[in-house]
Image (cartoon, rainbow, N blue to C red; front, side, top):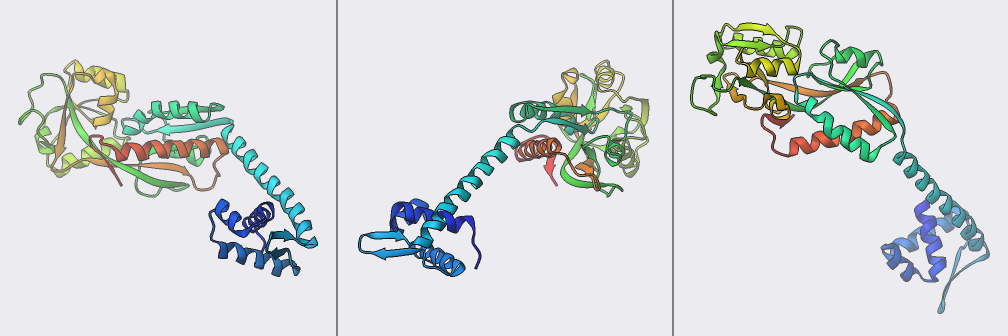
Length: 312
């Protein structure tokens, strides 16, 4: 037989109330279950612990000894829980989080910073969405704690947790004469010879776009490769060409205000966004706290309506 804190708590409550029925009501436990717990304790200590009579229940000498020790142990375990909760509430340190460029993940930075400030004000959050760095390599080398990246296939040295898929949309200058009715999905084949402003060929998004254009047998007219959201939005609004991005990037970026946004089809261009962490370096307490908050925000986002976003 084993002794656990639940049985000790039940024993102390029976002694305090002098009644199994009253203790059962307070603990919201069936009386037979409480009696069974007391029998288990008596079997373990090999002594009778309680005396039952018409006036109630009183502890034996052995029961009084156990009662005193049990009170001390229960106070210690309650204090341990309080200390643990306080420690969790005051986690301090630094966490670095990478967000894939030209993706919905970049629009999560503000809600993440807000929630971290409320829940973990002692944690300094470093956000990185640099175009010049490969986030998965920073994860592998321990220079970054975690990242939201475009990836679904395994990457050596990391663990990937797919979170959601996001669909790409055509983003065009205001007033641009596009095929079909306004708001109507546009076939990728219709982009043939359309002036396009795209990320460089090193970006996964560009590879997905090139693959979709090839499948649609459409020859792209890439005017420029831009790896800057402000520069890209300025070029689109100036009428230099169209681009292909997740809808959330456009709606979350004020500099894209006024641009036309059209869904793409035949084929649909989509990408999996995954949480990337090291497979050999453990996360620190601040990083674990930040990951929990980030996953909550992503879960809320995928549960509500966001154009082009769907759970994996």
